[in-house]
Length: 124
Image 1 (spheres, helix red, strand yellow):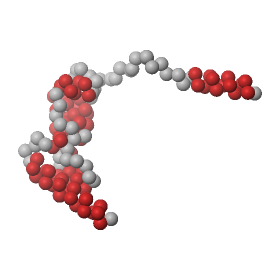
Image 2 (cartoon, rainbow, N blue to C red; image 1 turned 90 degrees about the vertical axis):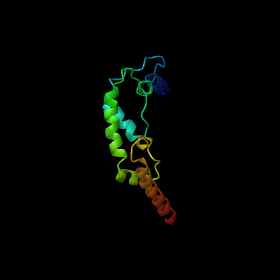
Image 3 (tube, one colour; image 1 turned 30 degrees about the vertical axis):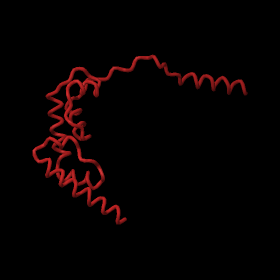
Image 4 (cartoon, rainbow, N blue to C red; image 1 turned 180 degrees about the vertical axis):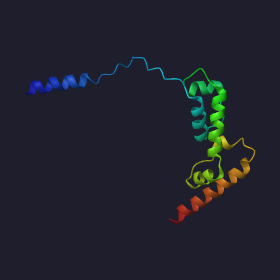
């Protein structure tokens, strides 16, 4: 019985072996629109093609699609109502909103919500 358990243990452990030198699977093509949206929603600033290629592990950067997605994500994250939620939750002001013409007003909206969130947390 002990032998059988040892055999099954050895077989079970050896089945979990992962070759550390096996090549990583090649990722599919990057959805540059979605990548731009995600970067804007993460609060990231606009990036160069070189940085985009490195971050997304894809040398074939479609800058126009990325910028289109970034602009849509920027529209969403830089919405004053969204910034109020972000500010009251203690999130930092997104860098993706820094280069907009109305950045000062957006930052003021975010700051007011941040201050209100801090005040509410102190009262609790």
